[in-house]
Image (cartoon, rainbow over all chains, first blue to last red; front, side):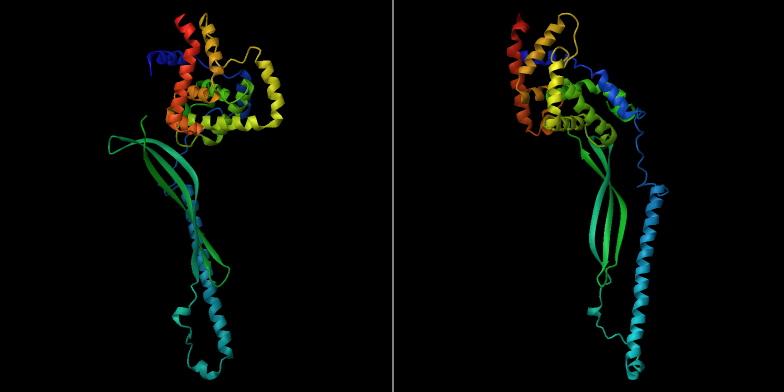
Length: 178
Length: 171
């Protein structure tokens, strides 16, 4: 770029843009009210601090999911023998004497719960600032926070189980210097 | 900027960046009142919901301002009000730059008039480059054009301005 253009650039840079009007300031005052102070940076300790209340919440969810799964399996377990008992009652005595032999082949056993869906939802994204990688490469550290959800469905009925678990993913991206 | 962004109040942040953001908003609106409307809309959205997002907050805000300006321009119901406001404001308070003392203000008026005569697509690149100090890559991202196009528009704009302002530069 020639010299006169550079001079013009400098001259333009010296021109100060006008300040927003008092009316706009008032509007913003009205919008933000007492929100004047920026909210303190959120502390993302949940992924590393197992004592966090959020982890307690997730652990409770996990335990609840496990209990639901056990209950579903238990129900199925208890329901099946009673059905077997009913069918056995109708069987001839000779068959009952022969013992409770399950005549189904292993290949025909229904898979009780099959995974049918897996999804993840990004619910938060935080820029954790710049870091140096290998001592001299400037990079930006981003924390992606997901909830992964897996769903299993009972192939012989309509019961399903969902399991959600939080996951943090940290990406370190080189910063382009330009 | 980072300090004001992380720890300051919205007032601190707006005090520093508000004037330059308003200048950008002005490039995509027909009046200063419209520019303030879209700046308000974009800034409130940014401060409430987007502050934690990564990247340069100014780029985010300017993209947001530009979108708000386009939406604003499309709104037929606002057109009449805007034109009325515009007519009133053009009478003297429409300047995008602060007044300068003495003879400097005459030069400011000259420059501003020359800027107004630039094609809009050149002027927006010039404003983003000079007063926001963005790279051509960032400008390309904001305006959705290749960086080379941004660079050439910038050069055309400067060259056109120099031609218009030459008599004063050397006179």
